Image (cartoon, rainbow, N blue to C red; front, side):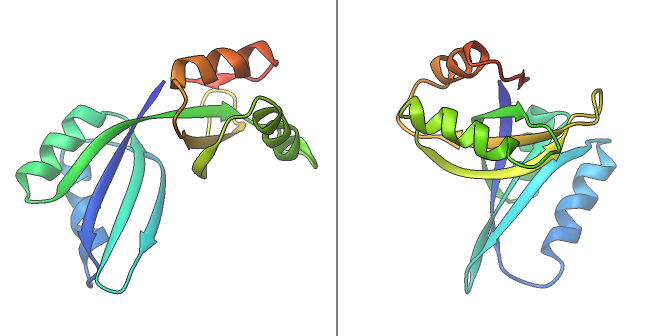
Length: 137
């Protein structure tokens, strides 16, 4: 299981630089991220090397953040593999809220980071393992 840091931020110049500077100063590596913006505010979602430290660091700096469980599943860098994963999720009646990509620094393979709704994330992980997918924690 992976921990994702969700940061609720004002949509203004320099925000991402400030966040990355704070993480850099604590030697926290960003392993994957996605930004969703709105007119005035946005959400930065990221998987980092030390989520608890990142959470505390950003909270102390005045950012509104939270930690949530997400899944990481390796996908092959080849035509159709993402579709194979999404078909397995659909066939198992698993709803996915959102996804973004990272990569496994050990294997070099892409990792689909995803947040699932309503299901027990540990059951989803076991289901994906049983279907032959490699989950990352």
